[in-house]
Length: 76
Image (cartoon, rainbow, N blue to C red; front, top):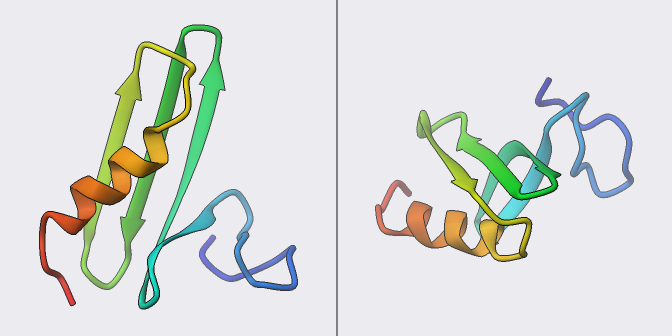
């Protein structure tokens, strides 16, 4: 699931994608959208920490919220 499969940059596994938080931190996860809802789930396998967001809006910003929540803690 976490082995790069499809892109030259190695950012996509079988159904999970990488999301770069900063130069040294990448999270694995997935997101989705339907009318009126947006969900995100990303985690760091080594840190064993993940964050899930649910928004009752399809607007952008979920990834930036997820990154801010993750960076509240120092895992590196």
